[in-house]
Length: 214
Image 1 (tube, rainbow, N blue to C red):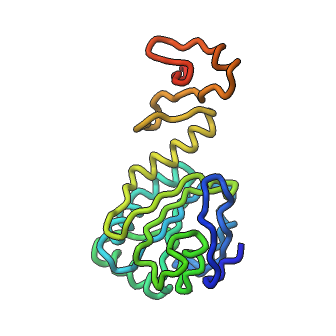
Image 2: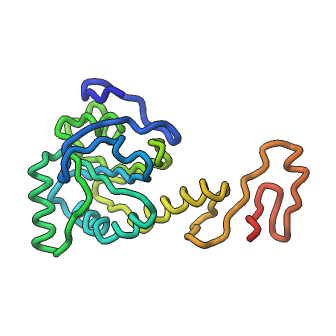
Image 3: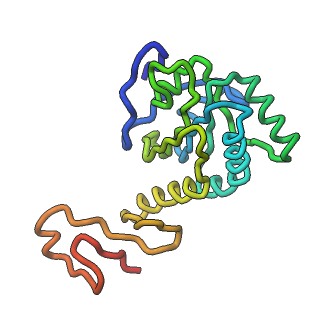
């Protein structure tokens, strides 16, 4: 996919391939294809040296072992340049004692941000972008979220989301509202009349709402 900033791209959709890119980061050059075979959480932040972004990065760094346990890598991005990123994470380490040990992509041309729909094609900067993409091991976008610049994301919810996607794939089941790892799952709803009529729902269930048996 051509990520030229002069081109307006259609919005990404769930279950579509994530647009490929190659860019400089705080941990060397990175290409999206480097993450094939693992889950990836790609997230943008409006700007370095800002309060909400700093709180998020500290939380992401502290939760990184839990993402690692899920086989999910972290990759951050903003339109700030590489040296701004480096100065910011140096300051976070010096002032808060937290090491940011995941890459931060520089995107000064906004080519990647616009290609992913993180900013409007006509925007002059990325100040409104706080986007998150969960990309599976095949390079497919499985979930997306956007927050305004002044509202921080929930790292706990992102961990839950990745775990739910992985569990749904592995068990071929659905996760109910508020599901947490280890809790019961829902059977997929029947897709045709014969399957619906053949269902034998238990107490408190219906043909379209059935719990997965242990």
